[in-house]
Image (cartoon, rainbow, N blue to C red; front, side, top):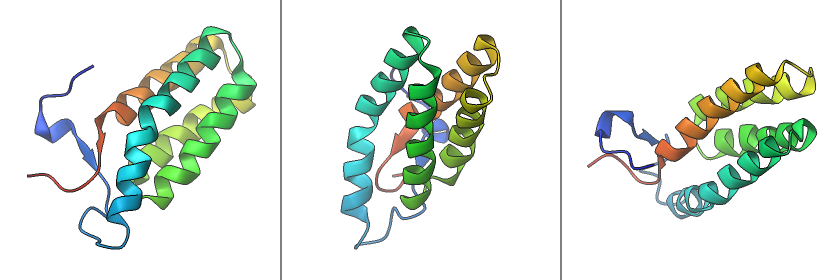
Length: 109
């Protein structure tokens, strides 16, 4: 998925931070792997694993300045933990994946 609308991109609140900028970039670079892990878990209906990954995303995204992603990851984590219907979990996954694919290091140009 390619995002072309600059308004849709999500930047870290630490985008201008010289000390954290490199760490944020490393985190964002790892996002495609995390997304694939979530998709793999969902494909196998492994809600426990999906919830674990969502939990990790919740904490990491917040630590790296992506608060909106944290909130969406928490929704998915809770859905998995509470054994919500598969449709609800899939919706939460779609929301989180959509946000993850829009995450960027740095600042808007």
